[in-house]
Length: 61
Image (tube, rainbow, N blue to C red):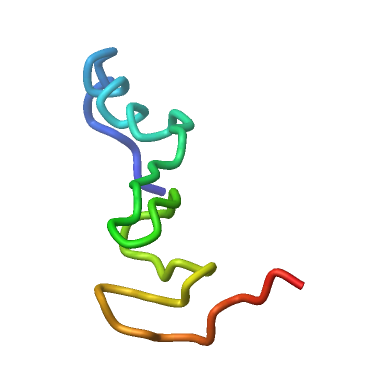
């Protein structure tokens, strides 16, 4: 069984745990529609991604 040679300091432990905190998801305003969307994701209302039509636009029916 592997056993650590030295005790992990509070600083190193904190560095490791710094990514465990829950962060709010980021949103950006779409240039064309003005709607909020996730970065690097397809805009589901218009179906556009990086200026190209990727999927069919969602109908508001």
